[in-house]
Amino acid sequence: MNFLADDGHATIVKYVESNYAGIQSLHLSRCAIGYVVKGTKYVYCGDSRYKISRGDVFYMGVGTHYVEDVAEESRSFEQIVVYYSPEQLQRILLNLNMNYSINTVNAHSCDVCRNRNHVSMPATATLRNLFNHVTSFLYEDNFIHDAAAENLKMTELIYTIVAMDECCLRSKVLSNVDAAYGNFERVVYSHIFRDMSIEELASISHRSLTSFKKEFRRHFMMPPHRWFIRQRLMQSRLLLISTSKSISEIGNECTFPNTSHFIKLFKKEYGVTPAIYRNRHSSFLLSPNGNVPECAERDGESRLQPSAV
Image 1: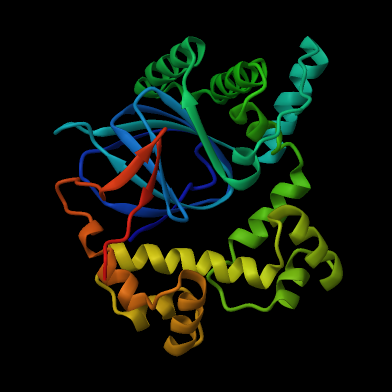
Image 2: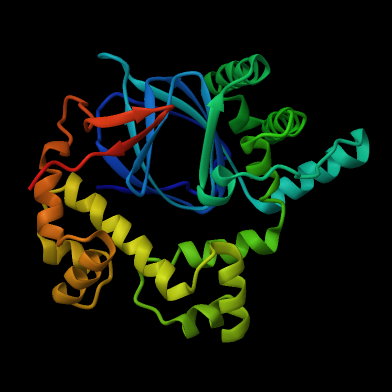
């Protein structure tokens, strides 16, 4: 499994993948808005698999995502991704608000927005045209030589989304306007798989231990220790079904102090040991030809179905 990250420099990028790579662990230090040009994208979250089809626009927040990019038939998978920081978003929204009185109030709220770090929807005609125009700019390398052109396209994208009716995509974008929130998230997500105490994380984020725990609960809806354990267990579960690594190797990679502790926590969370979980899902291991796990599809969401022991 690869660990990917945006490089912190490129802002608008087109990815073309001809070789199937299976499920990937994708770490984002900035937020991303993307558009699937060809193929299908899957995002794994807990027991669910969310489908992002060709022609869909998607948002991914700062942090680790588990994704699978599948080419259509024997062709390649293509997507355009726009990366931005809270600071960049603030500047764009301030400009839109001052010069055009654009409404930047975020009044939308639903379970999807609260519980998931990604959302997707079919692109509107305006968004499709915008991304098609971006494709031609990328083809001619215009963004590399003209930062102003890139900034204008980013502003146009944000304006198009903010001008939409209330929806999850608009809400997610507007929720990133707080730079302090973004910086706090970056500190947390960049240390998920590092052996550090909560006290050390509080110090890195320039907060007292009490202040750190309080802010952590506000952002992630649970105590820090419990959240970190859950993130590491989610990573271990994906490694179990998508790699042939041993149980001890996976436990070590996911920062558990020893194998027995890893097995104990895994069984407490999922009701079975890592070995049994792998055995149940052995039929879901992905093959190089691009086959995906058999799932119960429902409205773009799938749930992995364990087989009988």
